[in-house]
Image 1 (cartoon, one colour):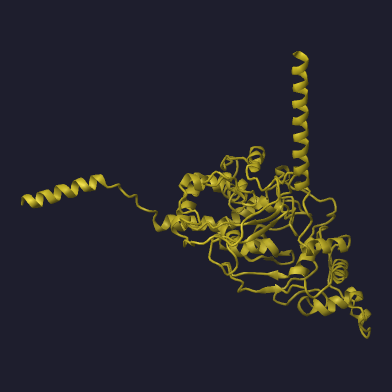
Image 2 (tube, rainbow, N blue to C red):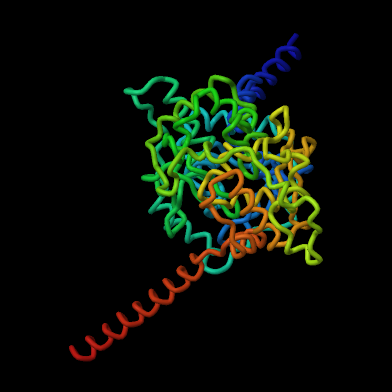
Length: 463
């Protein structure tokens, strides 16, 4: 009995000496974090098509150069497995890694700063317990040109442009509006793409959702304006678009927006999609002066088949007419008169915001790269709704075809130019920010030298 007593006492002392292990999050907490990560579209940037989820490696084109997404799985060697909740929060909401280095705002921490403490904790639970660890680093790393390769420069940028205050509900607004504002401004980061930026690449929030060029694609105006924005859309039409990427006789998603729908938006609840649509329709209207009517109300069905019947193709195919190019490349899907497919999956080219806008970049990009949809799980299984003509058509042919489509079915004042097509084919216009930053450093050094010389001169004079 004494031996039994000693064993029990020893076990009790041992239990006091051992640390008490906190229970991990339950399945409901992890699932909530998964939903929030889906709303934030984390997988789209931190995964390569066909690769392991959240393992990084995707190269994101920016005006300053390519930024390579990092591994954000719970790997303790190559991911974020050693992050505390505070370190995770600082990275997601303040753009500061666990090692103290600054992130680049290609990671939309300026929007994620709106996320509440509770939702940040749920995200942490998901990434630590709901994502499979990948013990490998991406093959490439970010290597921006000087001075932006000095990550400390982002600290100054954050002081100027980062608002760290989480979302605060507007008590004068409805619960639906507040939920929509929280998602649109925060996790869904709508302003990151749809709001124009200033010379230092910060969002001009006075022009919230007023439209902006996003690399080669154009993120359109989605304010409540009836001509330039979505003021003429019903809330249900917006919800349908966010869920499917298509709104009949108005728009269809392509490029980055199609990715956002496939990976994120279509997986949200009806209530959250309605909340986002409700909020977006409340954003103050901004109108482009060139939009003299709703961008979805340009054009009508038509063709120029009579003009090309019996007319042989020119020996130099770059000299084909717009009607010839359209008949050869587009009519089999969009129909001879631009009506689109009978089931609506391939849209009409008239009453279409792509051809109705004064900015024709998205028309050119759709011709160059096609329209691709994914299954939302990192796979390209859904395939192309429209093939890419980057290798098939020359710049001259795209200019001819684009202007024909604009004249026949869209806003005839929106032109496609040779310079535009060449620029978009080559990845977009280069940024002036690198040159401005280097010039600013040179000016700063010269000013500092001048001040030092002045100070030395004063000392000698005083002596």
